[in-house]
Amino acid sequence: MQNKDNVILVANEASTELGYKLAERLWLPFTEMIRKRFSDGEQYHAFSTSIAGKDLVILGVTHDDSSHQELLDLISGGIYWNAASISVIIPFLGYSTMERAKPRSHEIPKGITRTRQIFKAGPNYVAFVDLHSEAVLHAHGGEIRTQHIWTDDLVVDKIQKSGLTDYVLVSPDYGYSKRIAKLASMLNCPHTAADKDRYDTDKTIVGQVSSVVKGKTAIICDDMIRTGGSILQTARRCLEAGAKDVVAHATHLVMAGDSLEKFRQGPISRVLGSDTYPGRKSDDLLDIYSVAPLLADIIEQHLQI
Image (cartoon, rainbow, N blue to C red):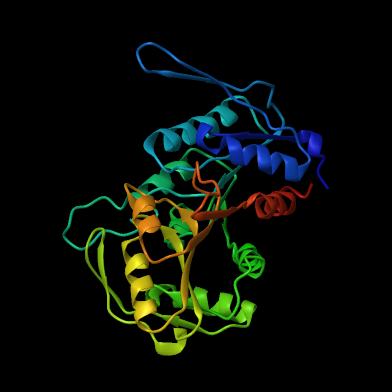
């Protein structure tokens, strides 16, 4: 067993709020990074305590370019200042839907290339939460331990405590239906999948939903809501098929552009989701739960503390 006194927990700036929640669950102090911005735009970082010989845990979303670069800097800084080990937890992986390039497209599959940058920075361990594709786990030469953290137990617990009854889980496409089937089994409820076709980068057509939703509350589940177009279409198809209410759930609530307003004006009464994406808080539409308890368990198991 390791001593918790040997563990230093830091986060990139976007993950600071989740970092404090995680530290509380681990019964550890959260170590704030020292940050400054120079007049020419360059950014200064320093650890606020010695990390030499310590087990450094870095919490870092990579939802934008700045956060991705800061995570790379923190990993490199940990190596420079002789951390005994560097463990990285990525609650939300940016570009995670771009894990492969279409033939002859000459596009850059940034889900793979950016994850490879993280691996090449030299951490000992990298864990991801509810990945869109597990392909990114293998974007290294075998020298790094990786882990895919599934939030199934948290999702089930949230739905069970949500006050919803007589529900059916709905996958917005067949690609996610295996995960939905597992969650439905844990919840002892029926499940179905919508027919969806993608015809552009952010555009889809949802054809129909099974009549199994008739008279029930449909809970549309996905790994993330980016623009929400397909989920809103699926919600309308659920109502057309006789659902009495429609709720959505996604681990990662990106909610890009004006999607929040579209949801408020749309057919979905509530959106359940986690705090993996920065800035998401409960309000009249969003019902947020924290992944901190799950991440704390993962870190304790990994570091044996």
